[in-house]
Length: 115
Image (cartoon, rainbow, N blue to C red; front, side):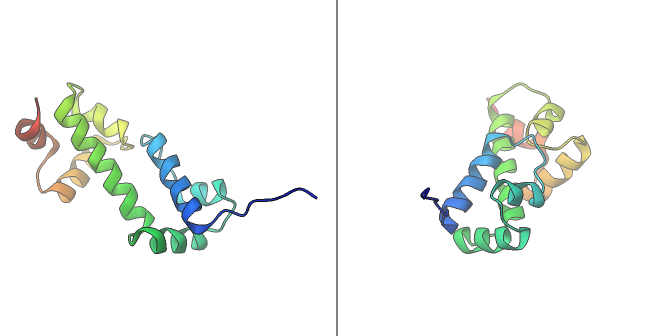
C-alpha cells in the first residue's frame, strides 16, 4: 500500500507563503490558495492564523507592501509598474493602499528612501 503524507498545519502555511511570494503580481483568491492545498477556505484561514498570528489577508498585504517599498527604493520603474508588480492593476488603488499602510505616498517613499 502506498505511503501517503498528510501535511501538517505548519507545512500547509509555509507552502501558502511560498506560493504567494513566488508571484506577488497574481491576485490569489482565498479559494485558489485553499484549492492548492486541497482544504477548505475556513481551514486555510484557521491554519494560517494559528501559525502566524495574523490573517492571510494581513500577510498578503504586508508582503506586497514590503516588496513595493523595496522596488520603490531600488528601481527606476514607474509607480504604476511597481503597483502592477505587487498585484495592483489600478494605480490609484495601489497608491491608496500604500499610503494607508505606510503613512506616505509611493512617490514620497521613493524620495525619502530611494537611491
